Image (cartoon, rainbow, N blue to C red; front, side, top):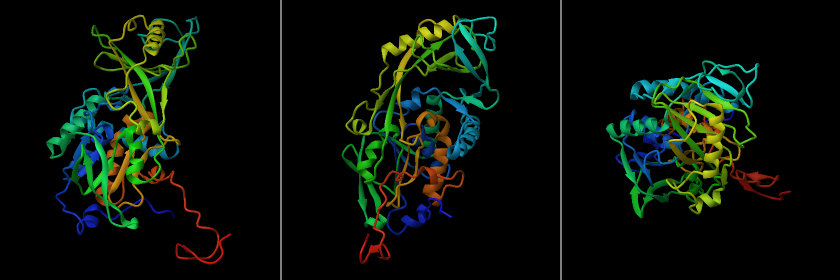
Length: 402
């Protein structure tokens, strides 16, 4: 059987080569960095969390926050089910007021008729139909609240937060057992016991640090938020079919704050890894497309007279997507103490708790026990050495190779 990606526990590996008082440095204070910092502090660690802009500056502060227990497939099934349960645990432990269970409907845009089924009371405009999609496997959370409370809990337990740009790493050791000895932050060398890259789409920068390919596409999408302060918005998450009139495929998430979040607006921009490494759209500088704001506003306003109108918030964020749509989670091959957790695509908010917990287990115990990380190897796109098909002496090719 193929062994799980594992490593001897960090305290065993590092005891002979580094000061145990040095921090584990986490690059990126979005949800995945925040969750990792939180779970590390639950084990007595005091990590250093670094972000070039602020906590929850990108998708972790502007995403929709929809959670689905049973929507995984293949290797992601374990991420969905495990993390769905962890969200409820975190909501109770940290007092996450925006967390709640929510039923899910499928909505067909179009003209209302005698055959239209009405389920959601605020869909009082033009829809062709609506039907149940998931009655008891959905939930939601406001990602900004979750991210900030994870960081606050970590800081209270001894973690540190530094605003600054991670510019690179310093390495030590040979090719077979390379280690990260320091992280360069705004030109300053910060010694570390271990380093974890949790930078979302900007984890593409780690390609040069780790000398492995990190293919990544940043998908820049607009979202808008309406608010009904007059009364509670009944909880129904909507997945709407394509509305050809406006070029939208809306996802609608009402929150218990009275906010109604819309994404699936269309017109997303695809930013490749070279552009991300070159500095296009850094965190905090991803802005909404006015044309897509109008399209989404018009589409939603035809469906809901009660809630439509003028949005209170227009914004955009960029979600990170590797070529196979699976996240990078694991130890970086060739390093004893370098890790990556990034590229979680549209399920980044749902998967954040299990990502943080699994990565903390991998770093401290040498192996993740809550889920199997093998499908998410950060080096899975590295070219495999061919080595020829002839005789070998260990890894060394000898004699004719054909």
